[in-house]
Length: 153
Image (cartoon, rainbow, N blue to C red; front, top):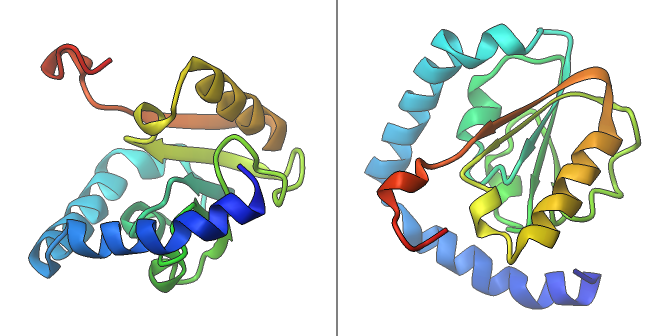
């Protein structure tokens, strides 16, 4: 996606996500991610790691996980408002060129891959993840259970 396409889609995307969740929903999500990070995900992330949250959205995961350096990547420019102590990068998963090769210890994405247009974009995103991960790095992917979404995938 070109910079011009990103800029053209940004206002629509920002409005969509501003209207998507109520404040109560966002508060619940924040509290839920604190528990999930404490009980599940923190074991995969060292407090000295560089962590990248791909499709960071409202940064619930980013803000709940403990890491040495955090990067929140999303197409939505409003993500920057939620990024806390994370560096915000507005970019598609298929082009993580603002992130240096071999510079990330852990990549996390939740309910992200199903929003890509096709298998080619999924493969390009995974290729970009491989490029930016350090040797021995981890890619943590959380996806919906497609058995409960018949016909969508």
